Amino acid sequence: MIPFAYSFIFSFLLVVFILQSVLKKIFAVNIKGYMQALTILLISVLITAIPFQGLCLAQWIFSMNANFSIPLTAILLSRVIDNASGIRLLDRNAVLTSTVFGLIAGTFLYPMALGLGRFDPYEIGWSFSFLFMILMAVTLLLIIVKNRFGIVLTVCILGYNIRIMESHNLWDYIVDPVFMIISCIYITTSAIKHMYTRGPV
Amino acid sequence: MNKHSVIILIIVTLLLHAWPAWRHFSQFSREPYSTFRANPLSVVNEEKARPSMLKEFINPESVSDMVHVSSICELADGRLASVWYGGTREGSKDTAVFISIRDADSREPWSRPRVIIDRKSASEELKRYVKKVGNAVIFTDSEGRLWLVYVTIAIGGWSGSSLNVKMSNDGGDSWSTSERITLSPFFNVSELVKNNPVFFENGDFAIPIYHECFGRFPEMLWVRTGNNGSGISFRKTRMAGGRRLIQPSVVACDSYSGRAFYRNLASDRKVAFSTTDNAGSTWSEPENLRLRNPDSGINALLLSDGRILMAFNDSSNSRESLSLAISDDCGSSWENVSTIENEEGQEFSYPYMILGRNGTIHLVYTWKRRHIRHLAFNDAWIDIQKGVRK
Image 1: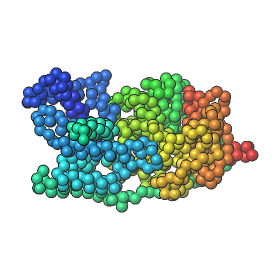
Image 2: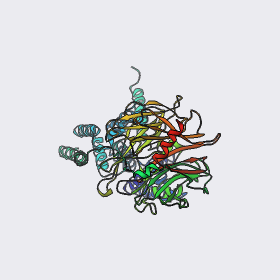
Image 3: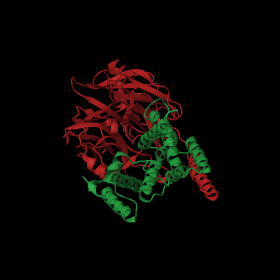
Image 4: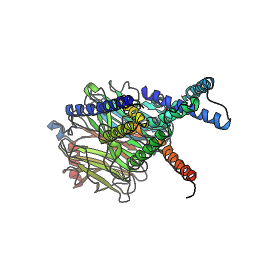
């Protein structure tokens, strides 16, 4: 039940974020304020929960991927709260760190897990291994330098301990294919923007 | 973040990481990874002396147009249970997993097949969209509980497969709700099952599975049931890399050593094998046997006298004949024993064997995609076949 609840929350946040983006960017509606936020939340709950061909949207998303990583959910939550209230749970530095983390983790994991070579890095995520030690070191380092992505990584290990997802493998708590693709796009666009804002030397 | 919150977060992080470390080391010290439970049975001599062979259909009046991928097991009370999937055609939306049960010693026919799971019930139980169901394997664990591991697909073909598990404590009359097993970080797809589990001395078992997407390779799904079956945990290890070996069939030769035999997708068309000396933890580089393989499922079984029996399609390009071969040296060299089916233009495929408690070997396989055939024979019958060939 807990894994589906987590998946429902992810789907709900995704719907809220899409609604906010559409209203803000296409219809130029002011979405900040209690009434606007409440309306968007109610509509999002309905969209997420109303069944279509026997399954609600959350179940359709659950069908495609039951294990959206905690960093992706945290970024989504941060954007939703930012859109509604202007409060940034994850600042730009934390988002950039998370996307770099997602890109590195995904690049290491997916090619080998899908058959490149004989070593499967997914194996080290089933129970305590050096993956946990690396994650702990990265988390502590980020907390010490006061990067908020460190808190997200702490939530990852908490989620793993209480089995918030269907997966019992730590990798699924820290990275997923969608997060990796988003990380790749974010880093690429950030790099391009950075190049243009610097201007010609 | 101020200084105090940083200190609190550091302490929380350390504690949260200490928990899985403590759990891992305490469990491992209590129940270290075990050795193979090889199963040489002491068979009654007169049973061994009389050759016997029974041939029958499990589903003589087929309830579906196509049937495929059967497996068989002995229930805790000695009855036999067989499962397979059937539907209009392979991969159609109306496929369902069927079960049929028969008293092992009686001449009563198999029970009328009934559906254990189809796409509708799987979708309800798993709380997600299921396009179709596929390969299923049934077996009894060391506590007498019946397991069904089966494939569901949400998108695409077999490369979109995921594995699920159901259990029964009453010999298949009632089943637990399906549980999805997450085994791949990439949308949890491309994990399939075909062959028998291998059991360990401490009650754990491992199911040979395989990945079939960008890479095609064999894997072991390790299952630890814990005390009284509580706290079931899964983990997965890779047996070989590459894009050519799937559907592993694992046989334990003794407590530590064993052999895995593979369906070979490569153009050399030979059954491949690899070896373990540490009860399946690691496997040697795969090599080819002299036995032919037309990119088709195989199955190997350890007999009561330590020999290994293999059922396979003895051809490089068709599934028209199904044969048996035997090995006296844990799978290094093989001798063909018998051709049990051979008919041009037909398919006899996906064999699955078990050794019954009375020493009877049970073989089930797909018969022309219309029926599931069951053969029950003993060591003496194999020896006579060997003699006939010589």
